[in-house]
Amino acid sequence: MVEIGGEVKARGKKNPEQQFWRIGIDKPIENQTERTLEAVVNLNNKALATSGNYRKFYEKDGVKYSHTINPKTGYPVQHSLLSATVITDNCAVADAYATVFMVVGLEKSKEILNQKPNLQAILIFENENKKLETFVSEGLKEYIELNDSNL
Image (cartoon, rainbow, N blue to C red; front, top):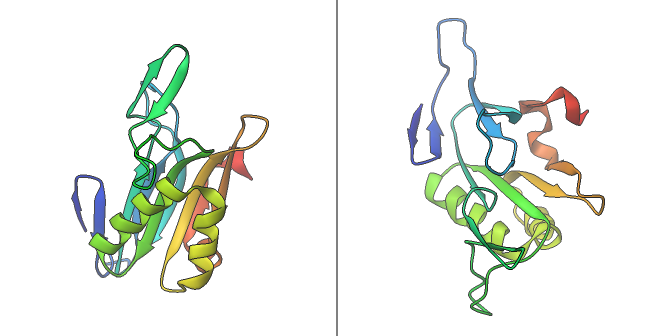
């Protein structure tokens, strides 16, 4: 397992007991002092990358602005998606799609996932009540353990 700057590539099993590599996905909480995991992914011969807007943002006049810029508008994105973790065979591809998902938002990300069966994702977003929800793509459900508070 190799991790460089938040991108992970795992190959084979991690020990003689033949366990998958277990990769934690942070709960997207601003200014947290302790890490809280939203999920753990059991990764085998795959790459994983996460993008989010809950750590890097700025606030002006009580409004938060994401560091993710929509290339069509030139402005920071404003939607409910807080974190996108993508799993596929190639780390660069996983990283690119995680960033794309942060630009296009939750619904468009789900559409892309439906068109690309080689991509799996965990999308963490705020619902209309400002509560965190987690979407897990179908092919990933058997390889993920969600935090008990999300069940």
